[in-house]
Length: 196
Image (cartoon, rainbow, N blue to C red):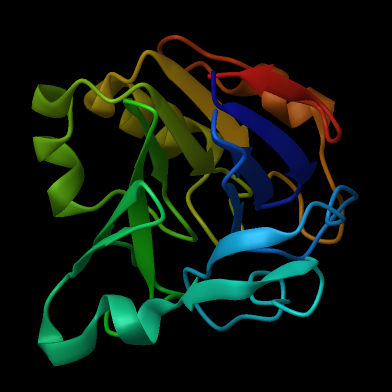
């Protein structure tokens, strides 16, 4: 069974059943010693793009917003037994043409890695996809606030909704996480690993 390790802020690691290792927005916390097969970067803000942090396998691939938006469209990647679909991510602090989220399918589980965003038009289509996990930023400064993030979670209707990116300059803010009221809320502390 695949696992997800929340590293803190907007960073997490997914390990597939076959031990394929995926890092999403490396920046914060611990747990970068497992060599990466795949690194996903949603945009080029320094708290999301520290690709130097994870150990890497010799054939490690990195997908950033540049590849994800190549040709002016949201691209889909199938690599190392994983499907990565780029989706919309934007708000007043994040340009739609320079930011993406990803829907990652690994071992039959779908994980919405939203990146830095507020509500998007595309989110309205996600409920029909019956996503398993949605990780949503809710700092209320660079991204949507807790109320909007909770509404997005309700709109998306994932099996689990996880609030992340809760306080700039901090790995985590438990009090803010508790105020996230989105459907099927799951609060993860930095360093906590769950089976997907």
